[in-house]
Every structure is written in C-alpha cells, then in structure tokens.
Image 1 (cartoon, helix red, strand yellow):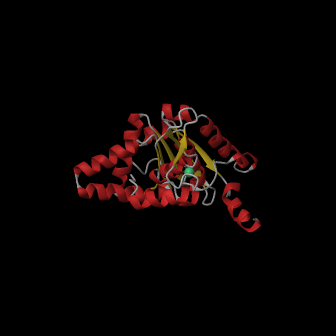
Image 2 (tube, protein in one colour):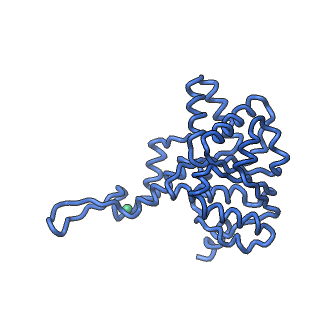
Image 3 (cartoon, protein in one colour):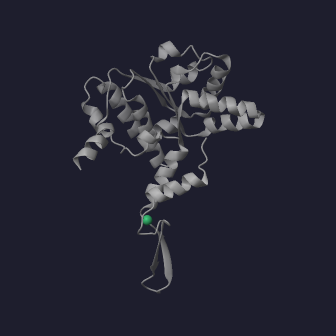
Length: 249
Ligand SMILES: [Zn+2]
C-alpha cells in the first residue's frame, strides 16, 4: 500500500522526464493544418509512468532498472525445469491472472527467486495489472500497524491485499509462528483464494514443509499455486550485466 508523496513524484519526474519536453511530459507543437497550438505526450512519459507504477507496486529498487530479460534462463541447466515454468507462466500471464493461478517458488538462497518474481510483476505492470511486491516481515508489520489504528484501517489493509491483481510475498517461511502474524497472512491468502486472485510466493522450504505452518491456507496453496524449485544459485545475466557494462563503457 504505497501512495507516492509529492517529493517522490518530483524525484521520478526529474529522473525520467526528458529535456525535449522540458520535463513536463508534454510536447507543444503547431498543428500544420490550422497553425493552432497543439499538445502531445512526450515519449519519455512512458518511462515515467513505468517508474511510477513500480514505486506503487513496491518493486525493490535493485530490480527496478533491470530489463525484463530472463531468456538466458533457458540455458541454465541445473534450474532449467523451474526457470522454464516461470517463462511459461509469463507467457500465459493473462490466463493465469484470470484464473487466479500463482506460483510457489522454492529455492536455495541466491537462486534468484525474488528477482524472478519481481520480473513477473514487472510484466504484469506493463500489461496494466495492479501488482504488489512485499517481504513477509514488511507485510506483517503493515498489518499489525493497521490493526493498532483500528477496525477501518485494518479493513482497508485487508481489502488492498485482497484486490491487487497479483501479489508477491517474498521469503514467506521467515514468518514468525506467532498467532497474530499467522492470522494476518492466513486472512490475506483466504481472501485471495475466494476472490480468485493470483499469489506468487518465494520460500526456502518446499511447500509441503510450509503449508501447515499457516492455518486455513491449504486450499490456495494446493489448488492455485504451482510449485517449482530452483536447485542451485543462479545469477540472471540481467543482474550481472550492469556491473560489466559500467567498467566496459
Ligand atoms: Zn520528454
């Protein structure tokens, strides 16, 4: 749940709008037929909107600038099966979101789970879906804070997480087995199951070892989340390219 502040919007404009439009996002020109002044959106607006959407979707800064490019995944032999399923999910994204189908990405630390999940969300944003990326601790902290404010704030929190088109919960098995924490998460997952909304989960444990930790979430986990596992550490080219580009320029 992020509503960008005026300051954040100014930063985005300064970074992404160009000088051709004098950072207004609008190009002023004379209509050749009538000579009247006309306006058209500058091509930089797309970059600005994209950055704005990623901010609202809480995509970690480290992944925001990276291109949506996991084609090299196809050549990663050890993780081949899991990575191909992610590529397939991206290809069938509209269908997946219409049916509320999600993924449970289990993998060793450093296997690129969060990067791959963020990439799925970035594709969804480009297709004009509403997406949200959250670390489990961050999600629970927001829920507890809303509950402390009162009933309306907590309802607003739950409604937001029920309605966003695609939700990614990162490192879900880092949740404390505290009753309150478990209830916040189980309510979100149950609501999304009933609303037919997709969830992407990343975890270090396989589904079978996590599923019983959070009550009443078996339905969404078993019926709507396809499990795949990444067995070895994988650094997508997109993550390492920036560094080599910097020194080779
Ligand atoms: Zn411009």
